[in-house]
Length: 126
Image (tube, rainbow, N blue to C red):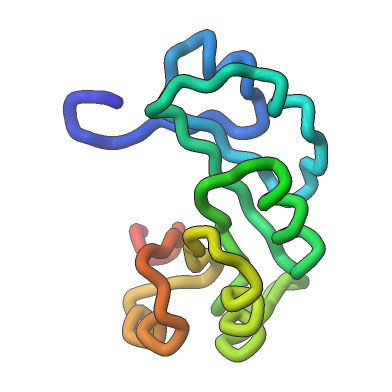
């Protein structure tokens, strides 16, 4: 962790993240491997992953992630869920769920409808 309190995660490379002493690693939805379970992780090391459907959520749970980014909540792309399907997927896991995809200042109030504790979104921070 740096002086500002931000955490630094590396995508898809456990060995490098551990060697560099980073805060954690992000496992994308397309990564369905379990190799990283052989590594001994420090106590403060966080593993997060993303999912777009129930099958991918189950895989992320088996991969041992602490939080699951479920997308796409608002952004109308090939993985678009919308509020109702997002809520259904959220109920399918006990892991911490993070809303991802199309969150902006114009729809931030709609996050209360899905009852998430956190969100991520590039368009929100632009």
